[in-house]
Amino acid sequence: MKKIVLTVTNDLTYDQRMHKICTSLVSANYEVELVGRELPHSIPIDEKVFAQTRLRCFFGKGKLFYAEYNLRLFVYLLTQRFDLLCAVDLDTIVAVVLAAKTKRKKVVFDAHEHFTEVPEVIRRPAVQRVWKWIESVFVPMADAHYTVSSGLAEIFTRESRRNFELVMNVPVLEPRVEKQYSAEKYMLYQGALNEGRGLEHLLEAMKEIDCPLYLAGEGDFSQKLRQLSVTYGVEHKVKFLGFVKPSDLKKITADAWLGLHISEPLGLSYYYSLGNKFFDYIHAGLPQVCTSMPEYEQINQKFEVALMIKTSTSQEIKRAIQRLLTEPMLYERLRKNCEVCAQHYNWQKEEKKLLNIYEQLL
View 1 (cartoon, rainbow, N blue to C red):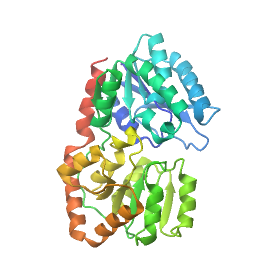
View 2 (cartoon, rainbow, N blue to C red):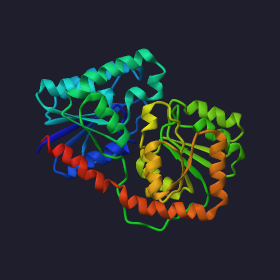
View 3 (cartoon, rainbow, N blue to C red):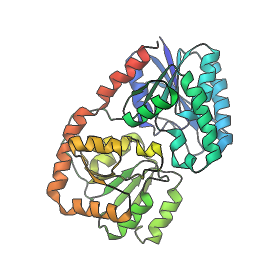
């Protein structure tokens, strides 16, 4: 049986996209291993149909972490049997390419984002130059490439002169069930609490919104946002859920009244993103407020599943939420459109494209 090893830098527990990909590869009769890292706060990983390995590092972030992790990953891969390696984003590609070339195996590059164009990298030109060099050297050395949105695929294809396939990060389509709302009507943001997600503006808007807000996730802005909720006097309306397992998050999303996807277009990565939360809300039959960026606008023009806002200012966010609170017919139209949209964008369709990429290499 052919073995595929896929590599990330997270601790595996909350990575819904990689869980889907690995499960699909197993269903196609590949032996699959997902490699990540163990963090101080990591909880035991749930058993899956694929193998999971976590590497422990001394450094937790920054250039020393990336150097250490790639060194540990390279050494680990040299000791393993595999037929193909997959690097997820630039942060594992050095170790993956070097290990694959050493053992004369093939490489797949899976770009979840435009790594050199995320806000954390853009504001540090020296760091950005290093990652751009890694991108220019190692990405063309992969044997196949795919990413999550058509906009990013076009950019990567042009920059690397390699063809990038499109495999969207969408949920598995499940039998439709009648939506049941929880006793408490609440809004939901799921995802990283990082710069550029519009969350500080959302908290400011909460001063004039009479509906609880749940934030599911953690990130670099976690502490700042908790402090802001107190500063704005909205801490009684905002619940920080922290990291949530995918199985639990699914229920929280299904029970919510409104989804929020209000990222700011800071850099090409965010501007051409097509985040999983957008589709998670759709599959849960959950209308959403979403920032108008090309990929989301294109889908919304076809199916109208979201109330789009031009910018993630507190005033625009507030107006959009209040409109949905006071216009039940609009809300119901968006909800019904979600059901139709889910039939077009689902993992059963994207899985076929994913498996075709791997089948051509093995």
